[in-house]
Length: 223
Ligand SMILES: Cc1cc2nc3c(=O)[nH]c(=O)nc-3n(C[C@H](O)[C@H](O)[C@H](O)COP(=O)(O)OP(=O)(O)OC[C@H]3O[C@@H](n4cnc5c(N)ncnc54)[C@H](O)[C@@H]3O)c2cc1C
Image (cartoon, rainbow, N blue to C red; front, side, top):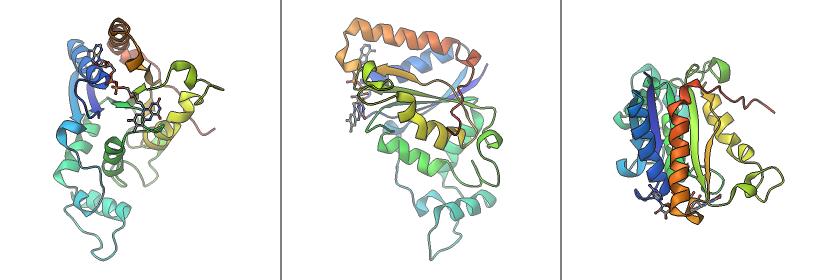
């Protein structure tokens, strides 16, 4: 039995992303795993970083986030909402991020979660990066939907290779903090599909999740 955190954002609970979020919880729990969630829209998570990330103050005159994070790490000074999210990351064996691709990246609320929750001293730093990272041994997977079709997301396709688009998240956030990255789970153009095709897509996702812990990591690397 493993611990899985699903971090999810979509502004519409009845969206296809909402369906994938619900499917992940249902399947992982049925497999006997423990599941915790961060449903950022429902939580009304504040994505804007600032002094409210902390209950402690390192420098009251000049705000420098990473120095405040290091100070907060030493003095248990993260605000309760940030501390709760960090503790979920510390608890999990696998974190899944469920989101629609917006402008080739994470939507703002999810990006803001990353900006505030991955904190110097606590989740990285002091020589603890990449393979020596704080979260080494944990896995991470992006479950992402696109508006565009699959042929737009291949090398020499209209938008280019999806792995290149996801590289800033895979390498700059996940591997940086020590996670091993699983292949992204991509659904292309759910709004252009038939109801039956979407139901099939959800079943393909369910099938993958049933054996997710036997999957090897992909290596993003420095290229
Ligand atoms: C600001 C912005 C930036 C964007 N940038 C990009 C970009 O860079 N690249 C790109 O490719 N796209 C982009 N898009 C498009 C976006 O990625 C897609 O609209 C999104 O991924 C589609 O997923 P959804 O969950 O919103 O789909 P929805 O439109 O919510 O869902 C599709 C259909 O699935 C149905 N559905 C829901 N639940 C189920 C279920 N259980 N079973 C069967 N059907 C179900 C819904 O009723 C709906 O008809 C952007 C969109 C915005 C708003």
